[in-house]
Image 1 (spheres, rainbow, N blue to C red):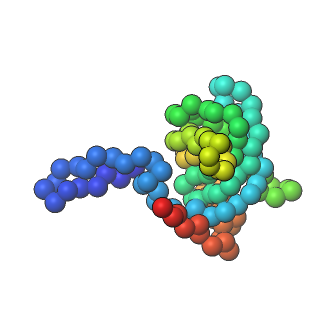
Image 2 (tube, rainbow, N blue to C red):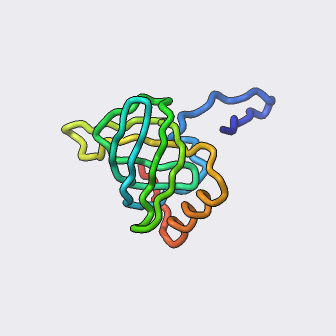
Length: 130
């Protein structure tokens, strides 16, 4: 995580993970299974980037939880990656959004990076709107 610097050399306060993304997000729907110290869960991806994934899941996992993810890229390809929960999204009755968690990948090896890059290569990045 990079800290921005003011002109006088002082570090600016760090922003939340969601606002300091380093990679574009791409819409990808894939099954995913999650193992954590809290249990075993299943969900699906809504979007993915080189740095992490949004997982649509009803269960709320605590921010900071380390996870072992099995991402079902295709019928014959499942990659196992480690991640950490960086944020949680809960819908309200007034807003029709998907519950889920934002997970940052940790310690990807070169093969995992290449598979994720191949998964997103030909997709258009999602654009955030306010």
